[in-house]
Image (cartoon, rainbow, N blue to C red):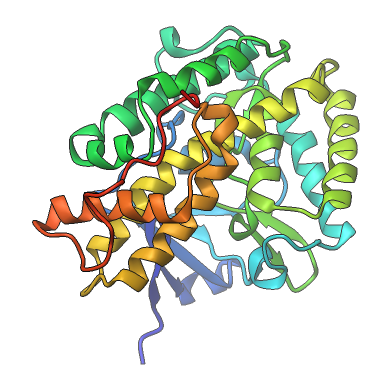
Length: 360
């Protein structure tokens, strides 16, 4: 039986886990993982650092609870954290133990200490694409621009029928930019930018480890909190308490890090809801093409899921409230065009448009 476990499938990588017997004699027991990027991926988020491995090496001693790194010949390996993900222990929408929530807040405090001029890891974004330190409005504007160019426009040739059927067009980004312009300036720090339940691992001693740093970047610290809250789906009382703790933690490190959070957190959460629309529309549509058979029931299930995502973003995108039927029809029209025919009973081709943008 092979000692190698894998591939373990994530969205960005395939991971293989194996023990290194020789390393146990050197005082480095346990299992290690190597990862290979999955080919042909669609990128929905900006990348800032050239190498996750290089970033983690630069953070050694500055951020606790990140995987140890070694090199075997020319291959970089990360220690495999033995434990369970936070999502496996506590499902989305549920409360997590306060002892673990305190460790999450501690991580935010450590991130706030890593300022843009204090890290040597190579960055891939050009200096012209980096807003000035503290320019929170400029930071969010660049994220909006990435979503518009690399997610919406880049995928327009394949998904134009679906985008238009759902009432999404280039003008949908105007309300996001209007809200971005109102953001308060906050000093920038390192952001993980993807702190959800599957990127936290709880070991046997109840220690919290943070994995998957591919999306890390420098920017507005409140954006990291907004992304975390959006992805975690905490119950309202825990979200409120954790936000209070976050304010105390980041202010104790860099005063001004939570400035204007009461007004700006809803704006950043609105952007996250809008961003998810474009991501989920594309992923949901492509998931249909992977099915051996797409019948009306499967199409309706996909339409129901997308309807909920669209409904949550009607205000930030300025679109009408869609119905599950109209979303399903738009999906059916796109699928029918791609496959050369519409699934029977999908409603494609008749009343497929969800609603014109901005409630016109």
